Image 1 (cartoon, rainbow, N blue to C red):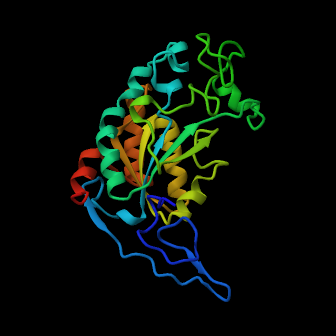
Image 2 (cartoon, one colour; image 1 turned 120 degrees about the vertical axis):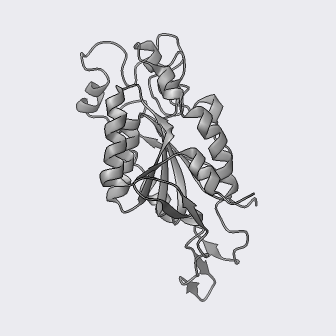
Length: 266
């Protein structure tokens, strides 16, 4: 069986669990819950308001909503006249950053808006958010170009943009609220992987990225916003306020260049 990229190179027979930090070893007569975690792999990242020392073995990157409906011509934002091109800004820096993170063993977790086809878990206030007049094309409605239904799970509208297609070993999580933690398995996945620090990227900076980050902060994770790997079509003051608030209340702000510079040589 091919080894999962986030598992250690060698684990004893009877090892139970995905995490490369914590797992059990079982036999017919005993279960060992005392497996020693690997030593930290420390890197120093230039950030604001303070520089940060990360343990790469306990760090993941969470990429939020870089999907066709938000970032691609013919997607939902394009259809409603929004500036989908603005949300494409993270693509180029992430194309450089993600291979380096994967090579360093850092899990890449994609958190995308993905509705149930029947919208059975979407209350009226959430549907109103994207269809506030009750008219037009909102969550779960058909795109006029025939490319699928708005943000529906496992469809072209909800898929990650082609330029950042996931690779084997990446982890995909569907969400259906502004926060990627609300009513999703994201927290469980991170804890099973032994993650304590998270790099955040995606769109929109002031909406789904920010609120996923704030929930991570409330759950006890160390949070770093990658400024050049985030984007929004909102007015500039929204980004300014988000960055200020992250530095003031919720974590740290850095960029992909600082992270790449800190990574160990492959």
